[in-house]
Length: 496
Image (tube, rainbow, N blue to C red; front, side, top):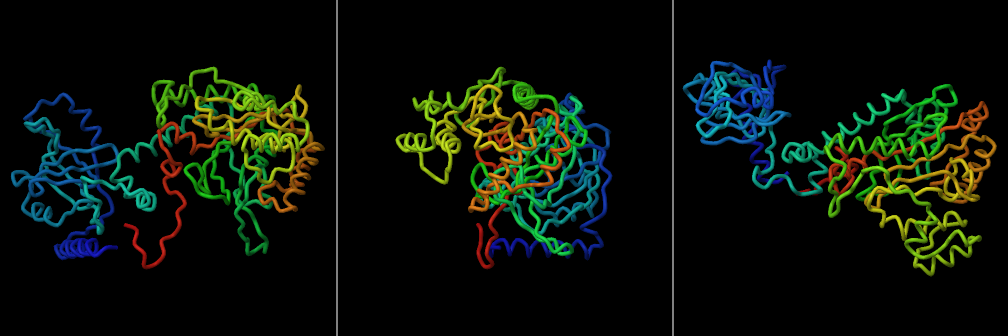
């Protein structure tokens, strides 16, 4: 805390003591409100200027601005702003003295009559005043706002208070999740919950967080996906299940990555990836229209058009269109690796042909996919939970949805053959044993579940945070997560 802030806090503490000495509880238990600000603006929208009514209302909220020595106060609640007119013609002497003990940021409750000023501002002419919370820290300057990115993420509650567009982003996030739930529920999908703590962290290629259960004296993992437990529910007799839940992956931070994030996963029996792409288009287009009343929305420097149908293109064709390389004609890992090097693709830890093809795609194609696009038919080697393609050898029935060069969703015709699944997870386990910390474990209980029989199923995962980024024109995932993961500030350091 800076010396200036410390001085302001001391002054507020002085006023807090003065309130208590006057017999006023600065932190009461409740207040009976009759209207929110937006309700008053709607109810009295036709009230003429310079007219005062006999209607008495009670409003409450946070003081965000005062003018003319507290004669005029801007009171904000969640719905908006209402002006207070605090004058000796309406307020008792005790309440006029109480005004002198208020500061910007305090919560108050006011009772008064509705009037509209000569300037046309709807106001409450105060006849009674009550302190609801005395704030001890000052809000940022009302003119400059709260603009420092690091401070905004770290003190998100202040960011929400001082930047209305931030509250609007989180409101749209909530509305988006509500719409998705309603869309799925209306199609007889059942929302369920699966374990966050897991003995085996499977269902994705990611490094998990590890924790320890003292009573059982065993390590457990925070889930990196909900997939394998949702599939167990399909096996258990439910035909359409989904979960919108928090996922945890021990990975780096970026504008598109946060260690904990929100994912929708849906599993639907008796469907395949073709049907799933159709349904995903319908759901996301409906969501865009619900929030924006149009199918074309701005994002950074482009307009994204979500009108159906969306483009669908095989991964091998997308690579060929962008680079001229026909990877389908290259039959060995070494051939693909040599071609990748000629294209300038960095060689990482690829060990087979499919991984190398996927790396070429990620390096050369992914960033070019601006309008909503399905990349379909992935290499088998990078899709251990997906059914083999019914027509194309070496490929699987998988798609990923991209927009503005970013992956939004991953779906496929689910693998239901337990012997094939065991073989692929055993290969993943060998990679993990060789040092690949993101490879999947061999989950023998899941294999056992599959041996009881799993119907043909389509499944998808949609990153809610990245989807909301597009819907709210937000450049960083931190802008759409209320409380993103931050490095702690060391003692003795200042942030601002």
